[in-house]
Amino acid sequence: MIAASDKVEEQIDEETEFGFWLYLMSDAVLFSLLFGTFAVMSSNLAGGPGGSALFDMKNLATQTALLLVSSLTIALAHHAAHTGHLARTLGWLVVTCLLGAGFLGLEIKELSGFVAQDAGPGRSGYLSAFFTLVGTHGLHVTAGLIWAMTLIAQFLIKGIGLRMTSRLYRLTLFWHFLDIVWIGVFSLVYLPEFL
Image (tube, rainbow, N blue to C red):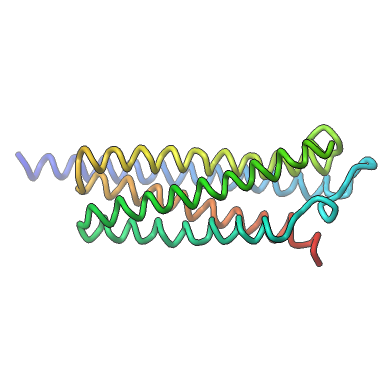
């Protein structure tokens, strides 16, 4: 009975993992479209400010550092869960949430500052594409934080097991995907403004 139950659970995890990879691929297509739109609209300033007048390198460096370090901490959480250490898993997940929340707070501060300077998404095609791309990434980080906090609660209730480790594995993939997208945002949106 136990062996059959484990086999069914393993099959459910395999099907869920396949569906999750399909989701990540569709998200990659979404962000590809947003990057393409930004590339097309990047010269449409309509008399409004461009990135060089708006972006703050210190804020950008801090955001990037927070997100990249959070990629390490979530990998450490996954490793701790894989090796059966509940306290370490929870600790690294909490650190990941704090780093992600710090990133999100700085992003919200940056975007609200742009709006206060009359550089909101309605000002130009450039700013519209910028807000859409960066805002979509921010919404994904928010979803990742909600997911991580949900997993923390589930780990506290259920402990470490095959299903929980599998769920954390998918969150880890998602979080790394967000870091890859952020590197794209950094390289294609922000960096050219400082060169």
